[in-house]
Length: 190
Image (cartoon, rainbow, N blue to C red; front, side):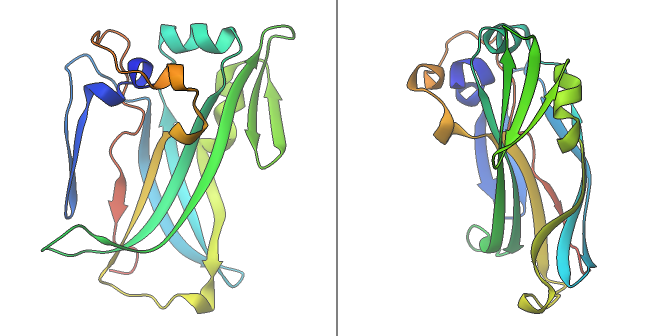
């Protein structure tokens, strides 16, 4: 997968509060998180976020059209920021998805926990994860608001679900794409 998505072409370094990336100039963002918020609703802490998806690169569109599945995950984490070491994860949740094209029917599928959204285009199939509204995180009484905590949302390839061939590193950078992107961080109770 690194050969196709740029994992081998990016050097990610976690340093406390910032995520730095050294990337090739032609590398592009596949998904950008433009807004995220944590709020209380019906006894739960819930996540609202806005994701902007870029066009699929030609190499991935070709693979998907041949039936290769594209697994990805949206991850939420609450962090205690520490200046002397990496941030401590207080709590986290991960939602996994799989985008797939069915060549025989020309239908795009987005799968999550046994549910399937079937659409005629990949933009329509990915629409349910464009605006996240009221995604439940944890019960209200299990978390006391703390102005020192930071929240983080990330979208990345779920490499656990990839086949070994798709994980091979590449020396060519023309098809690299930054799938993980930069995490969106904010202080929900500041």
